[in-house]
Length: 212
Image 1 (cartoon, rainbow, N blue to C red):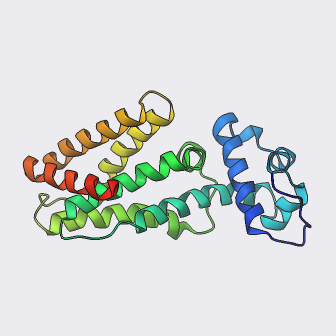
Image 2: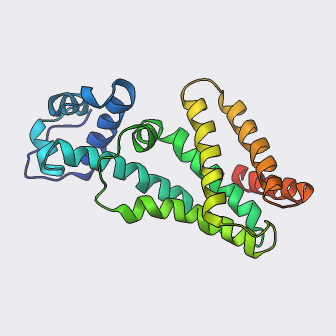
């Protein structure tokens, strides 16, 4: 439990706890259940701490969505570039999936709650642009047929998001979700124009790197 702090002290640990508690309330009970008193009680602090860190309820909700994208960006940025762009694209999908299952409440708020406007739109847009850049590398390397990288990236995002959502909703176990994501990615990569056997090698290479 977080100790009570003076409203004059902006403790980063308290800020993080408030965001995570707010995310849990929104994800499990809906935005209407979110109140300053409820968040403060769940975080073990006072309502003044919310004003100290965020200014009010609207700012808190923006901070919750923003934190979700910051954590997603950190996972995507940790994916290193190699000489195999299809393996790297697979690794980006794995990073997206890992972030979702590691931060399920924040993920739900990011994509399942009505957007409330972020303080830094570049962070949220940048997560999608990372995927677009990964697809463009595959096209430039001749692994995918010429196409609009934004269109292909959108298809991959929709695929991964759908599987993540089924897992978080309890319809797929973790192992089933990973297997489904792997097989679906192979089919999609083949549809984008890459050789199926080469795609399988790239996906296997990415999975081996992630397991290490």
